[in-house]
Length: 264
Image (tube, rainbow, N blue to C red; front, side, top):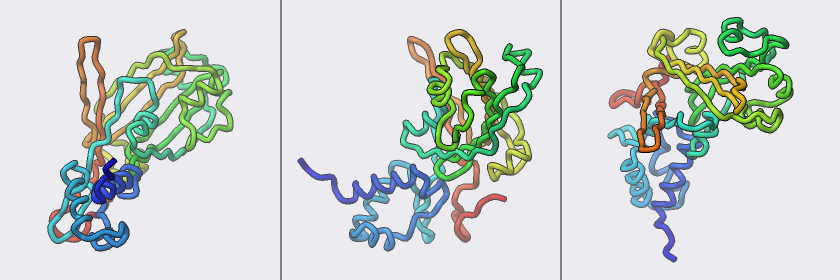
């Protein structure tokens, strides 16, 4: 069996490093001489690997400045019942979760009335930031009603996904979800968490997940930067699938001046 060429192996490894967030969108790759020494190959072999990545749209060269990771969209399918993080990880994209809070709070009256969830004992309010390829892109607020909330005590949601915990701890399995997406302006407090300016276009997603008995399992509220969201609807004979892609809304690498900076 023929072994892959060295430049293809380097290409695959650099792609892995981009996907796991070591090199985030807009970051400059190390100098070519540095990479050639790291991989133990000639500059020509290293350049062949970079050319392959350029052809795939993963990186782009800026004359006189180096090679930068492209601000590539991060796909997220809405056509299944997996969690957002599980869906992205299935595509080989690294997702980290920063838990901001996880506490039992009173049930918001408007949600109790509209969704018919019990008010006794409060709900678990779980607030998280999703970090994709090293960049915080999504603010997610989840409400889990009783008695499910009480069965999730002590779980580290930075390590375990909510839907997995519900299935394992509460025997609660998602069977149906309704999701509504609407345009908003980036709230100031969420913009601060994502490192984005308040008032810019954003998207708000509300997803209600239920089991086979129509019991509400989770109410998810997510905010994403509108400039980085593309909604797509894939139609087929047997139905359709709606999905959207996310890309880092921060400025792309400059073509002049110094290295790319982060927008305050």
